[in-house]
Image (cartoon, rainbow, N blue to C red; front, side):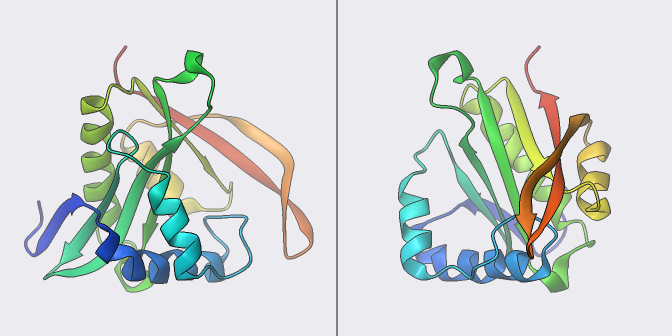
Length: 167
């Protein structure tokens, strides 16, 4: 791990930093279809839907949280219990500095320990920085959903990517 960086499981005490970073992602319109800023109540409810299996990890630089990743429920159907949906958010001033790689490696290890055989994620086709990260770690493009959602009142496409962790 790079000097100064530390990853660990998130705690309830990390929610303000997680919220701050998530709201940056919403503002920047590169990682989510969400348009409204979230508050601590929203993040607390979100946090409480994650258990040990659906882990949330944070990455710190000298004890300051600069990014987070979570394994989310892909489907409530038991047939998909081995599939996790991935979220990764990096603080603006740390994007492109290797934080995403560290988070991705750690969350993949966590996913394997938690009996997931596959990770899927949804990204915008224009999010080149994110796609570069995922492709670097052997995620493959599955396809593009046309007009999947709206952002600023306009339809946008959403790309789905996947990685098989345990063949």
